[in-house]
Amino acid sequence: MLVELNISNFAIIDELKINFTKGLNIITGETGAGKSILIEAIGIILGSRSNRDYIQTGQEKAVLEGVFYVEDIQILRSILEDYSIDVDDDKLLIITKEIYLNGPSISKVNGRNLNLTMLRRLTSQLVDIFGQHEHQSLLDISNHILLVDSFGDKDLLELKSKVRSLYQELKEEEKKLISLSVDSSERDREIDILKYQIQEIDEANLTEEDEDSIESEYKKLSNINTISQSIEEAINYFSSEDFSSGGLLNLFNRSLSLVDNGRRYDGTLDDLYRRMEDINYELQDINRELVYYLESIDVDAERLYLLEERINLVNRLRKKYGKYINNILEFKQEAEDRLEKLLNHEKEYQLISKKIVELKGILINNSEELSSKRKKISKILEGQVREELNALNMLDVNFKIGFKRHDEPAIDGYHKIEFLISTNPGEDLKPLSKIISGGEMSRIMLAFKSIVALQDKIPTLIFDEIDSGISGRTAQVVGEKIDMISKSHQLICISHLPQIAAFADSHFLIDKVREKDRTRTRVQRLSETARVEEMARLLGGANLTKKTLEHASEMIEMSKKIKKS
Image (cartoon, rainbow, N blue to C red; front, top):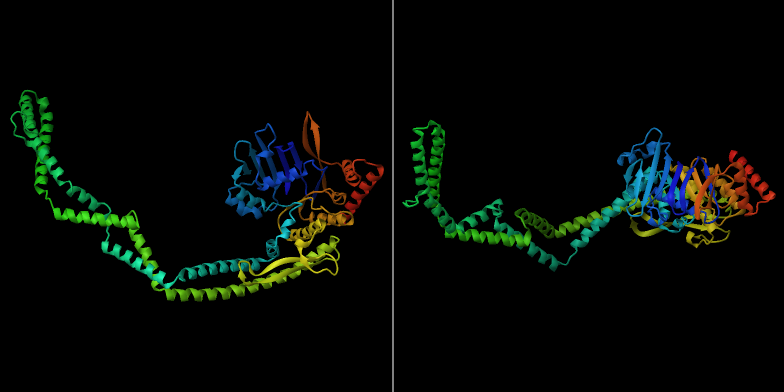
């Protein structure tokens, strides 16, 4: 449950702290005091998108924080593990939302940053908010089938998932059949193109050598003259007989002789002489190898021509089918697969057609079974809704769940589901969208919420002026119904009706005060005396008389007796 709410620099709220309790928490206050801002703040904590406009003028950021006590932490265990969120033995989740003026908003759970999708997945198990305009979801027919399914067991949910998978598989097979249903001339044209492409790649007989080694060999042969001239000139430098300069070998031999002459008189030159002798042998080897290389060079014009042709062929294939050899070979494999399908067109067409018939049969059977389960649930749900509506002083209401069969099974089964209602005796059943009264719609939604609340595990429900459009005895009945739900759930309810506020386990007053030329919102938990005064204001307006105070006190005492019973 939500045990603490902290808000700072948000809209007209400077600093605010509210400690909620178990049971029914009622919030009342004048119009414009900030009740809707309070609900907006909770919604943002739970994962609604924030807006920088909420940051108070002159402030850099707004901070919203909700502290939740999770009695059965196992319900959230898998989600907490997925997001690496640690929870101490106190079982508290602290959700913080920081809205920055010049930066992105940040959501944290126990210090761990989460994006909105992750946050919503977590908080959807903590709080369910029902706003005064949320009953519009009941007017959307697509939500009706979801609501019916929410009362289903594990078997229904598995069957629903199976129907969806079968439907999607059927659509994929139908797409394949359409792709095969091209006219024969177009198919023949594609077959010819694929055969030519495959043959062209096959005839090239591509190997790994085509990637690098052939180009290297071509580069060598096409520059053979340059190579020969360079090596010949290098050999000349090694062994030139020019008397004026001498070749490298001759010069080095002279140097070697001079050092040899010197070492006869100085033994320290022995090591240097041996090193020079080794170099002399190495230079002679290099010279011999260069001579051998030059003599072995063969200008093979025919080989050069063949290499040039091969390179041109490979480059043409690269332009058509892929930058690298493996890309070309992959293209060929794909072309062969496509060709095989086209050549086996008739066989594949028959196989897919047969599979579509089989899938349709299975889908129809499963859809019929799903509809049967939904109809059983609907009969029970119809009775429960009528019972709840009778309890909410809608005594002559007739509620039905209509099933309209599709021509073919859809992704959700064979039927479209729509809620139908008649609120007066003798009137025909009509879609909910035909109901005009906001009070009736609020009670219908509360009836659904009452039924859902008995089976779901969401610990906290927030009602934002669900009592719109009702008064008198009906308001008293709605108050009793809300009190009943609060026995198993924490309820936070914004209300303007004394009949509902009288059932509060904790009553909070939200108002605006003016301090230092600024208006700010405050929330305070009311004492018994202050609560009587607030109830009197709800009953009689600003002028509190002795009679309205007595009436307010009597209403609170009466509600206490009803709560105990």
